[in-house]
Length: 132
Picture 1: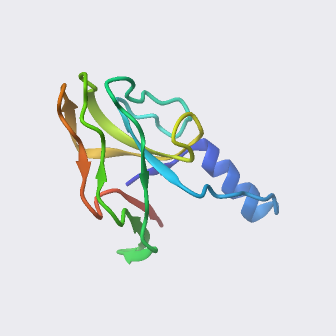
Picture 2: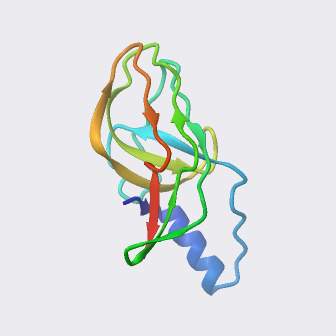
């Protein structure tokens, strides 16, 4: 289950408790990480080899046990790697295609080593964010 970043925690607390406006991004992007960023905005994101964050769309929240869950509503296909990307252990959801802020992060169900010519795909419903 993804965790909130410090950036998003601050923004949501200010918006809900201090009446400080928070403008949600029009598009969010999923990125691939080679380490767990915890909830900081310091990430070990893949670079080079044709890597690029991918836009991700989520369906409406639905009950999942005691939590509310949003899941990706379309397949996410990263470009074919033109160089090794390394061992991907985590993903991040960002508010921009490059740079920007980490909003959520989570561990992959199993780490995946991406070699030259590999292509990573997330099926529909496999990238989830829960709030409990």
